[in-house]
Length: 503
Ligand code: HEM
Image (cartoon, rainbow, N blue to C red; front, side):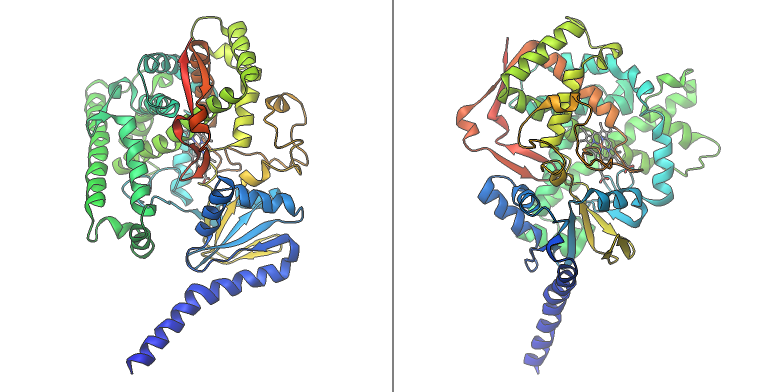
């Protein structure tokens, strides 16, 4: 009797976990022939491929890139995540459809803390909630409104440059985190502390630890797969308990700043000039208003702060630090940028009027974003209904990923794609066969990055100050072990393979 039950359960598991997803993918492979590549690893799925790539090429993404380079007809790779088909797409025409028809998909929150961290913020909301939030934040992220933040950005960079940090990424994170905190909460939250350290380091570490608790061990990964968000509530281990406590501390911190501001507004009213509003004022104007037509809640405001912190800190700081990495490799580019900064700005602070004149620096940042965009992973989505992408049928629940990192590094779209050549972006036709969805480090379509102007502005200001004060060297011993890893973001390890040396 038990044998038959065991056999029955095994057959069901075999069918669900292996046969069903495999057949779905195989049928696509048969239909598309050379345009599709099937890479199926039961249960462990894409992780096996990217770990294999790391071993072979010291880069989680390189094997995928090579498949596309070696087969010019290739449009998608057919993988699996556990039991779910996962289609990685390197074709800009198909990716355009995904970006434009964004409402057919749900973003996957790989940190799986939905309601407690970012679940209620702009990055992971969809439908009407997303529309309302996007509308609310559209204006303050306008370039003209952002200009008023430039003096604050200069000040934060100059202050942070007085401290010492273990790695260049620690420095740029500290800057980018402080900029988001002050953009959201204003001066009140300047130099805030959490868990007995500077708030931005703690929040970044918290995200890293959440990722570690999920992906760091097989136990954590299986628990996450089976329990989802309940992972943190059901028999939490020591690390999970610690994370729960720290999330509590973070949300309490945000709640306190919000409550204090509400009290102040009730006593003194809002600031007279809306141009002086920080992001908290903007949200509270809606929250405390008579209509509150978007129905925004205090929890959503907290989630929005965490979202903007998450979306705006590690991305911006990684691109700034990645820029330093490339400047250490290419001293002639470093010299050219230093000269441009000297000519355009001289010794003082970076002003709005300087930014558009820093053309070589601008092209350099775009080239860094082409060759190593750290934000390549967040674009994974799940179809929330059956979808047809040209003649590719995606079933509800399947996962798709528009793979910019493939398109950005192939001779199909970029001449001499292997060269780091920032001047390509100073020419009129940098991209071949461009449909507007080839080189999109900030994504594209209605769900593109709302913070992209802020990011470019901030990276320019960070680099101007650093380049004026520091030389950037590689550390040869560390460079020997260089690897490119896609954790949540894509970055190099070890982090200390470059160093800043005061001039
Ligand atoms: C160089 C730095 C940055 C890069 C490379 C970057 C990249 C991206 C990408 C690729 C997306 C699309 C994600 C997806 O759809 O899955 C995105 C969305 C987003 N980004 Fe950025 N980002 C950067 C900086 C920022 C900054 C500074 C902020 C705000 C402070 C920000 C806030 C957001 C938000 C809120 C979204 C979600 C928008 C929506 O879904 O409507 N980002 N970003």
